[in-house]
Length: 102
Image (tube, rainbow, N blue to C red; front, side, top):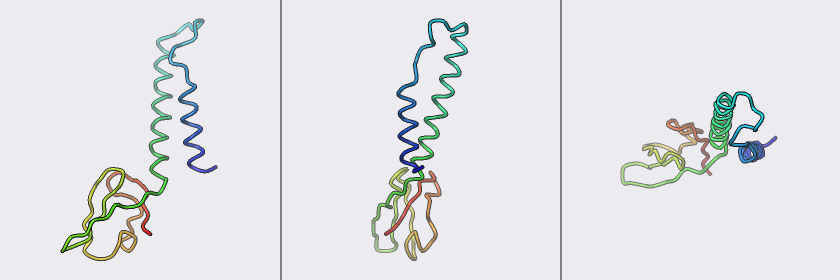
């Protein structure tokens, strides 16, 4: 299954999740706590999976070096030699976003 499909399924599950316990629930406070934990776990999984979808580096050039910018966290990396690919930057060291360079 593709990462995009999994993300879509998780988002759909979140959308379908009830926000209130059923009327016949004997422990509504516990139900709300468990429901909140499940919701947070799914949101976290979506966030992590979205970082596995490759994004292109943003690029700026200065007189002294090339500047590559993570499109996710906007962290700037100053490379004096080569591209991120040459320097084996396949992921942002700051946020973990998967990155590619054409």
